[in-house]
Length: 307
Image (cartoon, rainbow, N blue to C red):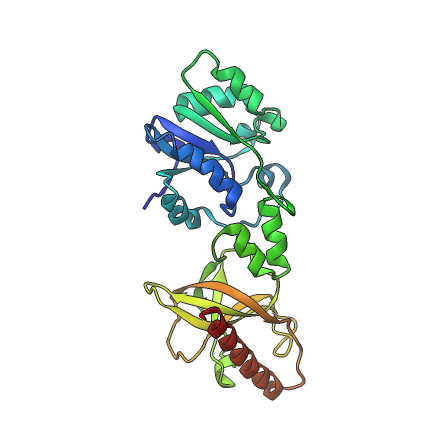
């Protein structure tokens, strides 16, 4: 298993690509392939952390994949190290030419540099592929430029995947990701209301930097920490309009036909299909009856998916 490392810990020389690689979609994988092909050097991905726009413009940048979530995916693709370059205002002032010389060539000892055709970097994003070409001429460093990957809907991008997830279009999001979308969180104490009406739920504490699908009730697979077994589940993502409309948005998971003490454990959740939007019911009994319908609908979805 590869681990997150700082630039000072890099195994050199490298075959490297730089970018956020958020989602690790088909376009990213094409770029990664060009890195791994130069196998006489250490296949490496370098990303800025935190995201430059968070530092420069105080924007909140929710991630499809947090750095530690990328590790098993990158490892399976042949990458040997994920380098996090600490991004701060001082680094933001570095010119593109100095970045290539000091970071890519001297510190990371890049012998192969792979970038997308639209790659921009350096102070005010002033650098591009031509900057790299200029700095590596008369050296033995290779530059590989990967064309932008498109499908019939346009450019394949992390932004498109976020839009699909926001609309709860999990099927098409999965196609672009080439894998199931998932998130994980630690089970924390709730008010026990679900258990009191016969539908115990695990309340998850999710990293605030993680992008989540649109609010609603979903059929979902849940994997319990230290277990490879996926459990059929119903997930509620959002507020609790019947219990208390003023409560903040939350993630709750009901494991179907399982009665396990999950407190303190980490759960990984893969939403499969949205069952319905959230509804404010007139009574707890109506809510309980609807949850039963949600469970039955979820079981039908799992059964059909397994055919």
